[in-house]
Length: 173
Ligand code: GNR
Ligand code: NI
Image (tube, rainbow, N blue to C red; front, side, top):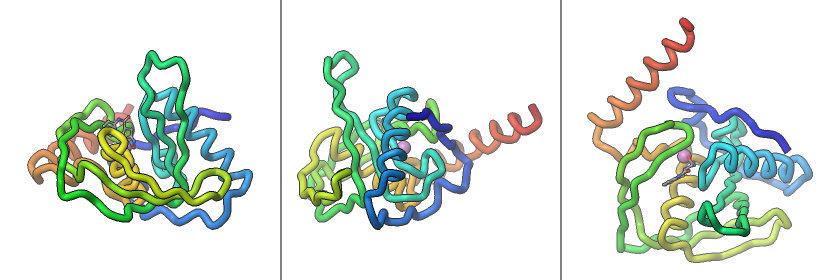
């Protein structure tokens, strides 16, 4: 396993549409392992492969509490949203690719999802609460969408500008 670098705004790779995984090969398992290790190290509750510059439809997640004895690592391959509830819910979201920026986002409160696990088995599930928010946030990443896209243009422009400026400062050194 290896901890990989997480790419941040304004990296254009975050806007790529990730490709479906055709077969669960040993390389896919290795990538999922690296993603889990990178996610726990960050730390974050979810990670999409594109956040470590791998444009494939693979997501890791662990929604267990920090002080839970057992970790609950989860892997979602080619996840799809089958349906969404009319009911909406608001969560304060953050993103490892937009460090230290948090804003409330409104999304469907419940979603039905379909995905493959690391054995290639199909799962149909209902996600609610933080699980619903997180899986929607991660599937958005697979489509090149970031949570700041749901904010006002004023807020989004402000964030984009801040991260563009910070990247330029780092380039100067
Ligand atoms: O660690 C994360 N926390 C989080 C909090 C609220 C809504 C979504 C998330 S996902 C985020 C990790 C991340 O950037 N995943 O793409
Ligand atoms: Ni994110």
